[in-house]
Length: 271
Image (cartoon, rainbow, N blue to C red; front, side, top):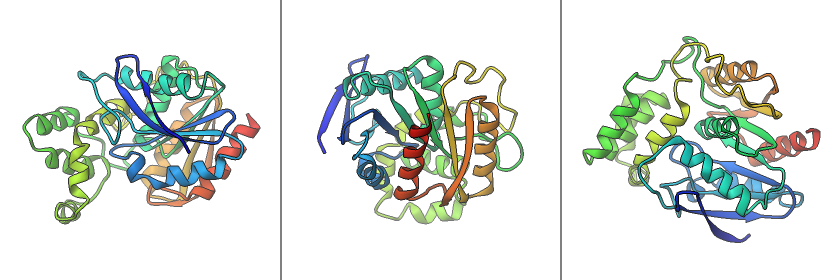
């Protein structure tokens, strides 16, 4: 289980962990998560390491990875490409993304990052009234809170507006030990907001969105997850001509390592 670093195109150092050998599967976290806070990626990697090279990395600004301002969504496309080139050695790669990490994976593939297959778990989309749309000034408010030295307010805005956590629950969370960790990665929440773009606007997905994606796509959602997340997954699967929708066991925006590993193994084997 070697740990290492890669260097992205802008000089940013990214920390990763790799398991196994074979064609690569790269696991991309969603908002606020990274290797130390998402053991599910490690557990999934261990189950797949008999057949694949499985890589988890800390997205820029989180965990063991650095950051180089100013941010642009293209920098994270370059980050994925650096991992594929420097760890995956250019072999045909599957990129899997959780939540807004799934939106990042879609954006990277559309941008031309050499990805052979895309697997997504509950990517972000709101095309009807199944969930509230994001405020029009969401990104600006996130950036302003961080710039003003109020990272906790950025976290709270993310939790209420994007993650749909009730305000009273967020007030209680501010008193918990884990809150400091969320504040530490608060500047990166706006990164995910930019990757999500207008997919949470409540409007139909733009016809030109991800139009250059022509590789197989697997869109998963938990069978017992929140209805809005089911609706979003269905909308993205219907939008992509090469996509397959796969309800899997899972709830509350997550699944288990054995379910995810089996789904990824089958998807790669079939494509």
